[in-house]
Image (cartoon, rainbow, N blue to C red; front, top):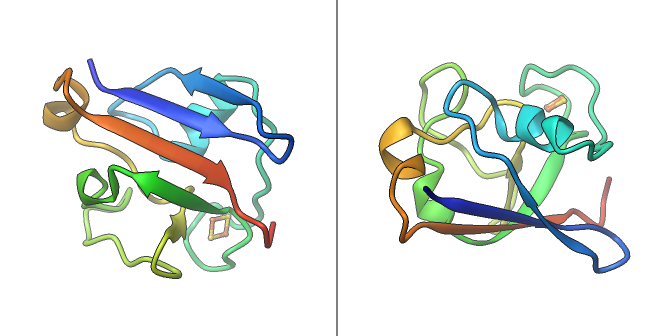
Length: 102
Ligand code: FES
């Protein structure tokens, strides 16, 4: 199973549960992480998150269209998910961090 970690604003790193049916934002919620959001539809950028490793694994957004990064190392957590094929790969490691702008 793939491993996804999240580092909060205090530097605390936690592993979050993976779920191919959930967006990254929903996976953060499932881990009891209170991450900012507003529209939950990819329109407002309030949920953007940094990714340090594994960006190539987040290819599709929640609606099945190609993922468009907000910045080079940031994307919208409410519309991006991870495919079952990638989640079942033990070698996949994805490292997320709270964006400075949220
Ligand atoms: S909550 Fe608005 S873009 Fe994600």
